[in-house]
View 1 (cartoon, one colour):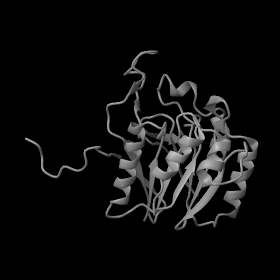
View 2 (cartoon, helix red, strand yellow):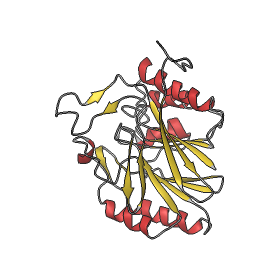
View 3 (cartoon, one colour):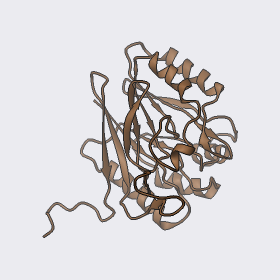
Length: 259
């Protein structure tokens, strides 16, 4: 099996709270009896895209497990490249793919610079088609992006989700090797289907965003009380994806039931 951990919406902001929560999650993953084969960070790495926030993230997300990150709407492409990836500055979409065992993980940049909503550019679709063409016929593929391409019954996120999801659905439905699509952005663990495949939305390490049955805009949007959480995706030998969502207690593990 392949175990892929997904961390999302860390919102590094140079404050102690969000940084400590992300560090606690990374420590949890490093201490697992069966450690992940890779850690995917699905956007909103920083709160406002500042270089010093990426410097903070680079230290906190450093691990001896491969870590692959993509941007979210709170990120800045140029600073993301220079201060997190160590690449030359550019405002072009940040798309990259990695092999994790026999799994190909394609990370897609769904951000629109300066806007909260998402869209995949034609450049990104061309890049993705090239990745699919170069992937072995018997190898599973996992797609990752920031913006969910489906209605989540969130009065906040549904207004700023992925535009033109049908274009991505066409790619997904025509390639049976794609085992699922994973995203962030919603600050809520959620699972549904998209183009006939699992769509798995990771929780945030920073906060929880309520659904339409929990909140009334504009008040009570974010809940900062819950512990940080992660998604753990298992891809088995039959190329089936199984996901566990796990809260990571800030006070650590308690092995004896409290009275």
